[in-house]
Length: 325
Image 1 (cartoon, rainbow, N blue to C red):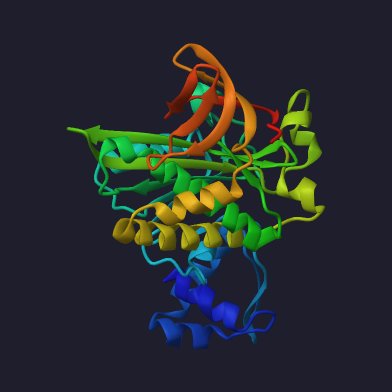
Image 2: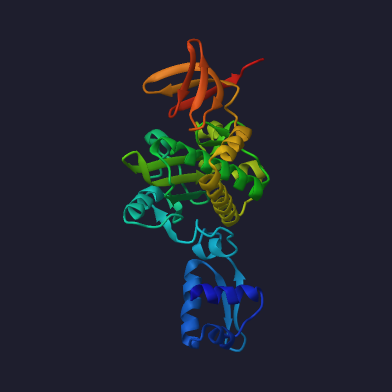
């Protein structure tokens, strides 16, 4: 019902709408309308009130509120159910619990700030207010050995959401990092629950440095990380980025379920800043030097080494420059 009150206020944005109009629209008392107005104010909406004129929506909060994400969202599955917290230890932790309890595919968990955000290999992930920190529950009909493809799909969707929202086009460092000017913009942590080689569910945890200032990147982070704010010089709409991501992700996912992941892999290759580069791959306690040639149909990185060619499904990659033809 709060959504309907907000919709009525947005239709008259900057102008007053009477309490009677809102109560008639909702078929509730004016007292009930007043309570919902109070709830919206608690969420951060600035709403003026006048005894004679009614209510006027003055401004929207710069928050990733479910009401805002759902307003105009073109995705039908992803983002239909949203769990939102201002502060959380980890969106992936809550997503795992919800997925294990049976929450449906498409459930979105997001927060303004993570206190214990994690990246790959157990690394901590800086997650202050101003970024975009979220997790998605996905239940793909895939065998376990193809689970990596969902990470590729998510990172491609993150690239295209960034393009649509900011005009910037980040590159992908295998398997799951977004880079701008060689500095990290975003990363993905995929966690899998599987049984008998079949995926039960995936949790895709994504962190994007959206509106973070230079103050957030101290020490070694100053040279290794960046944000959309630093790259564009202006604040970007985090709600719009989230909407774009959910829409692009859902479209690509539905195509992949019907036709396979060929188009996802093609997009990944197009956005890659890994292929053709001299790389060092750390995997399974080994450090392998070579040239990144391609990814295969499971998303494994194919590397040409002095001993031949190796495929890596997991590992840490360092880029050392492009191989000359």
